[in-house]
Length: 276
Image 1 (cartoon, rainbow, N blue to C red):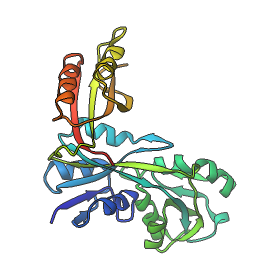
Image 2 (image 1 turned 90 degrees about the horizontal axis):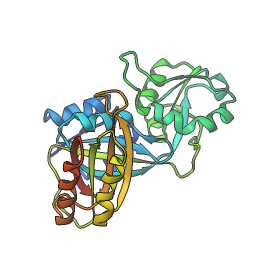
Image 3 (image 1 turned 90 degrees about the vertical axis):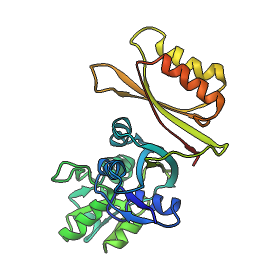
Image 4 (image 1 turned 60 degrees about the horizontal axis):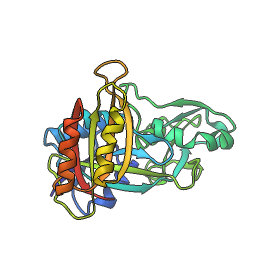
């Protein structure tokens, strides 16, 4: 039975995504995204499940950084509808502090201001310096037993930790969806309905990015995502995360990848995997 490392603790949206993807397996719950990658890298887990982007708030920076740093592959993707609640042990009018992951806070800030007629003080970091997961925030509020604190997360996590739902359907956007990656040290065989993800950097000169994108356009390869991130190698250098249709073993995609390698200053293949 495979071991699956899930951004924890139990009850996170990553946990819900993992349950929808894996029919069986032994779950472990590292308390940070980085530690999920560590578990897969070291062989403690065969697979990992982490959030990569939200439909309203964009990408998760820690996941993007880990994809660049760790020698693991994207094995699959999962799309999950996200329904946030505000939960605590008291009443809404008691709440002075709210715990949650930064992404969850951002997804709910508009309705939070209206519902709570505040905003209260927002707490997104643990004493260790790591971001709270939504479930860890719920767990923290349950342990404190203080009506002045509440957490944003899933209904399932609120019920698991014995909290009261203070505000339901808290997300600003009704159609709130998060994309998750399944990561592994092994890759996927072609299915005919695949995506490939890469990270690349281009020379700091006019037309460099245009020429890179032109490789995909000339080959008729559809890009499904492109995002820039600071490279952290030197000031004002950017890496581009690019998702496109096709599998690295497809002849057309293999040719495109070789052309991309020749036209970039940094290149990393993150994996080919079935569309979610």
